[in-house]
Amino acid sequence: MDNSDFINNLTFILDTQGIITDPKEKISYDTDWREIFHANSLAVVRPKTTEQVAEIVKLCNDYQIAIVPQGGNTSLVGGASPTPNKKQIVLSLNRMNKIRDINTIDYTMTVEAGLVLEEAQNIALKSDLYLPIMISSQGSAQIGGIIATNAGGNNTLRYGNTREFILGLEVVTAKGEILNILRHLRKDNTGYDLKQLFIGSEGTLGIITAAVIQLHAKPKSTEVALCALADIHQALKLLRLFHNYNPAALQAFEYISSTGMQLVRSNIEDIYFPLETETSTYILVELALPEKGDKLKALLETVLEEAFEKGIVLDAVLAESETQRQNLWKLREEQAESQKRAGANIKNDVSVPISAIPEFIVRATQACQETYPGIRVAPFGHLGDGNIHFNLVQPEHEDPDKFMQKSHNLMNIVSKIVFDLHGSFSAEHGVGQLKNYMMSEWKSETELDLMKKIKKALDPDNLLNPGKIFPKS
Image (cartoon, rainbow, N blue to C red):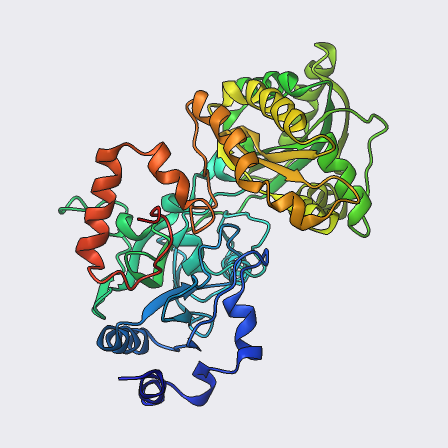
């Protein structure tokens, strides 16, 4: 059986729009968002139904062709891209984008895997409901990929990771069986909770085709402030102050370094920086409540007043309109894009205990600058839940390829400090093919062995997203 037979058999499952074989048309699917990983797939297949996904998987079993499930292709670790030297297809879920159900009594929505997150959020808002997974790529990231990577985001501090929102799943297994566990129940203690296996599995155990998502009440009042602090140590004091007053109102507590702020102001259009004070540490804080009134603004002003009195905050500005709120958030949301425009960059998506964040940032910054003089250390991220994107941007006017040759060395320097502080080398982006080599160093032999046994049990032929998560043997 050759590849042409395989492609021909796909035509019995999909329409002409569902199969892409032209190399020029495939390139955006075969290449990751950061343009680090690229490999040629035999074809990009775009099913419209779960049944078609199941038939494609069965066909791939017959031909022993690997499958790379792909949503919006926004992975930062090569988790949704083909791997070299492998017969494989990219299975794009982008045509499976329907809302199957929205229930305003149960506060749930049932959606297909190819629905873009922002579209799901907008549909929920029309029913006065709220889907609080807030990530920079929400305009292109799709529900299936978000679940498969257990995405975090800006609101994790309050609502938790994606895992906390998922009540039920529909999954196509490695053998082409349809596993329907699309339950709407908050409580179901009947045996193993199978959906948890697939959440965060990066498409290596099954292909998520639909999900039941838990929604929340829409916030009726929101307040945002950008604060300038003398150093990162003051950020923990400010976080504690907000917790002391009303932890239930705290929705986001985001950190931006001075370098990160400089890069976003230099590389992104229509950026507004409203503070008079320039310093090493900035915090963007958002409060929200499901009730209207001035209570929230008074709370924010009270906390910041005390923070000024105690010398925690040097300067601050409060958003007085929705436009101002969006402008403040733009300083945070455009961090990744501004760093991409500034040159080659190395991404470290790490987590440490919140109490260890100042030590981590100080140690890691010093270590990277000593190792690579001129490097621009630009950390930012979700300080409120311990997740820092410790990103490194090439020195100005340097060859990007030369810089990227040092990427593993620099990632290892950062990761060693994270390890010392009992953290994780991947807080929310996943492992993919960029960081799979770290797994054997970070996971115990017992833990890794159990993971491999689960993979072998659910995908015995290693056809689902090979080369991701597990270190190369």
